[in-house]
Length: 398
Ligand code: 3PG
Image (tube, rainbow, N blue to C red):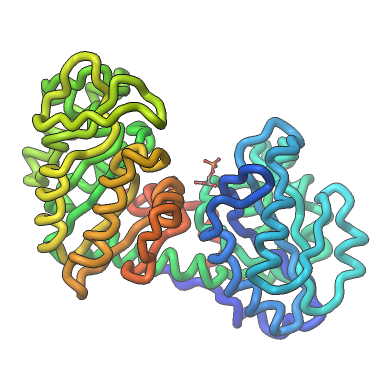
C-alpha cells in the first residue's frame, strides 16, 4: 500500500505558494469544456489549500500540441474551474509568471497555460526538463500532485516534485490510488470486466493482466470486431485493427487456458455507411454480412451481458460499447452503464474510468454515484491496474 505524504503533511501553508499538478486534459469545442468531470475532480484539493490561506498555482497539460496552439489553450478550463470554485482564477504563461506569482494574495488561484506548449515538458533530457521548471520551483513552498491521469513523467509532474522540498499527493490522487489498489490487489469474485472502445492497442496490457484474474471479460466497441475476426467470425466492413489480430488470438488462447471467459457480441446494430444519420440495420447473428459496419452491440448481447453483470461482486468498466456519440448507436453503452450502476448487486465493487467512458457517462447521464469510484485516469488507470510502476508516485511517498 502507498504511504503518501498528504496535504496535512504540508503544515502551515498560509501565505505560501503551493503548486498543484492537475489533469485538465479535457475535450474542448467552441471554447466550451465538454467533459467537466476532471475539472470538478480537482476542486477538493484546491479548496483545501485556499481555505488554509495558500496561494495556489495550477499546472496542467492539454492534448498533444506542437508548441503553442490556440485550440489547446487552457483558457476555457480557467472559466470552467472558476464556476466550480465560485471565484476568479488568474491566468499566466510559465515564461512570464514570476510577477503574477509574486503579487498573488492568500487564497488566490493562478492557472498556468498548457505546459506542453514547451517541448521541454516531455523532453527525454533531464537537464532540459529541470531547466523548464527551475524558476517556478524556486518560487514554491510546496508541490502537490493531484494529476493521477497524467502518468507519463514530465517536467511539471515529476521533476517539479523533486525540486520542491514540501510535497504531497492531493485528495484525488490518494483516492484514485486507494480505490484502484483495492481492485488490483483484492477483487472479490465473481470479477467481471467490461472493456470496450475503439483502440485495441491501448487495451492490450490491461486485457493481458485481466486474463487469469477476472472470471469474465465482456467485450464491446470497435475492438470487438478485431476479436471476432481473430476467432474466425465474419465482420463485414467493420473497422478492424489488422496489426492486432495475432495479439487478439493470443489473448483468446491464453484466456481459455487460464479459465477466464471472454465473451464477444452475438448480435449487432450495423449501418452501410459510417455516418451519424445512417440507417440502423439490426443483425441478429454474430456474423456481420458483407457491406455492413458494426456500430453497437445488439439486444441479445445486452441480455447476456446484463445477466453476467448482475451476478458479479466486482465490476470494472472501461470503454463504450458502440459509437455512443451518434444518437442511433448509444443504446449499448447507455444500457451497460445503467446495468452496472443499477442492476448489479448493491454491495458489488463498481469502478468505471477512462476518457471516453467519462464522456459517455456525462452525455448519457449515467449516475456516477452508483459507482464506488469513477477514475479520471484513461491510460493511467489501465497502466496502474495492469501492475505498472508509475514513477510520478515515487516522490509523493513518505
Ligand atoms: C489522458 O488523458 O489519458 C492523459 O492526459 C494522458 O495524455 P497523453 O496520452 O497525451 O500523455
